[in-house]
Image 1: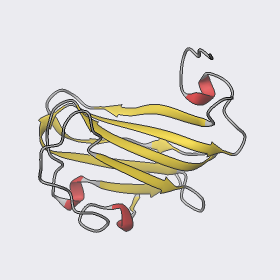
Image 2: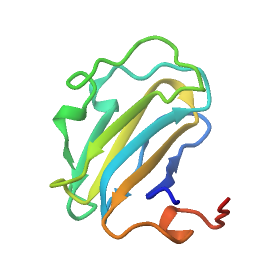
Image 3: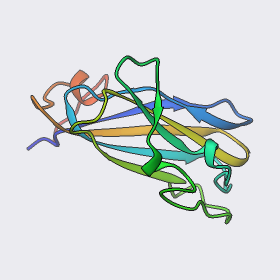
Image 4: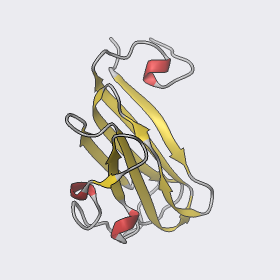
Length: 140
């Protein structure tokens, strides 16, 4: 039995940055889970414009999804968050939503941020290595 999802690293930031964005094409999927990580124990930025989620039909004109923004949907903790935990996770029902998602991930200190996404519930299923987002596939 195969998992019917695709996991990709959407963006990896430079070593000493505080903000990272990524554009994610969700075509063919019904659900997205976006993970925002960092390689050091830092807090999330509490500035609302530094942690937002936007969508677009054409991958160029993005509109903020107010219900997913820091300060509106949640209040970012000012506590330092361990590297073993995602700093933010967005769960997005893609039905009726625009094709592209653009998370902006901001941290309270310089680090190496990472944005990853798991796309699931595809219309046609994921059966090949390319369809699940890998160069090599081992099935056990």
